[in-house]
Image (tube, rainbow, N blue to C red):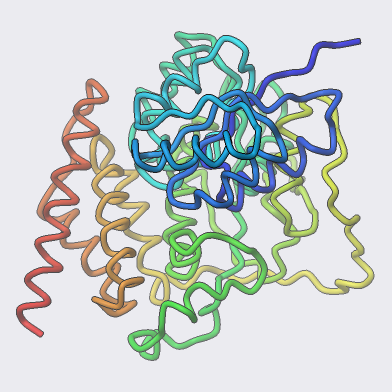
Length: 398
């Protein structure tokens, strides 16, 4: 009998983390939960510790860790609880951990994801910002430390499934013409651009197909999520901007496609449930049960595809610009977006001001060369400061 494989779930209380634990729980003979981490949802982390009995848990603050430690002790559950960013890196590198689910949202996920790579783990990458911000450095670390990178975004996982295994030798040599990322279009696909100024955070977070966190839901509404995925695809599959196309597909059944030089287009289809790509990554190269209902194409009956409207979704154009500029530009793009989205969710700016703030930040902070992770972190810090300054200026001008 094979020994169980240890897994650390970074961001276990978010939607990806919850789905990961659901899949893991279906295969108790295969996997053992070694470590969990959360940001603010301490009650959910407590419940997860009761259910999965990890050896370690991590929270951002010492006070949060103290409270969780006390609650677990009262419940008679032995979990070693730690606090802070260093503790996140530590659990990602534990010797008993083979798989690391990197599901922390945003730039905060970069350092622990990189720690897992440097420890030579199999990294299930749901934190696209790691590659957006530091693609060249991150991928070099994967090669240097012998880590294995498994994409978890449904689109990139679909591409991974439909590319030939030797794609690392070059897409052109494998007969690949282009990668086609599908996008639902989010909640505002049919709304005219002039009506977007007054949409609310609640409307932006009401995704028609997927259940996601608030930040990612807004990114889906602006389509910045898809722009970030374009940059992520560049690094995962060594593709140029010209080889990556976005296609609107409202049903979210075709998760992405690969077009080949012989006229073939290979696609991966499935119900919109993140447990499918998670199970694929955990079981690879085998297929394991995910708890996802089989796809009924007769019931769906129609699969529609539309071109992307950059007038409605200017954030996509900004992402392509940052990709082509290279260097620190993608990190600046990501940082400005995180600041702008947070401000929108706090009702401090309008929905249509998100791309305006990002564009201004990119213009004022042009990309520079990246030689180390410090270059990336400095660009991130400067972009956040500049975007925050824009918010303050807008508030004074209002």
